[in-house]
Length: 145
Image (cartoon, rainbow, N blue to C red; front, side, top):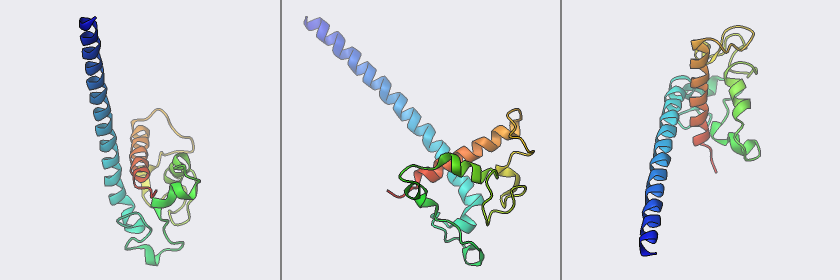
């Protein structure tokens, strides 16, 4: 009986350790994605939405309408981060006054899949989707409670 308990205990320790490795790995990967999104935010969004995404970028005073506070997206949508709504705003499928026309959002080709149809067959389309996912992962990570 004592040997059985030791074997079960050892198996539990191994399972917990293995689980911790997978959790740490997943958290590390999530942080990589969020870091990529932070880079994209700083490159494309910060000038209008501000260094902390509160709508107070250096270009904000000259813009109409004023840039949104991106840290309150979840709060303004009933406690749920509006991933797909924000996705469509970024990729140009939904017009956002201040981002330019659907054909040429202010951030240009970096977040736009060319053509009328959303292409699923091009490497560029995959890269655009990845950029948007990273950017939204970052925005989701900075939401106020």
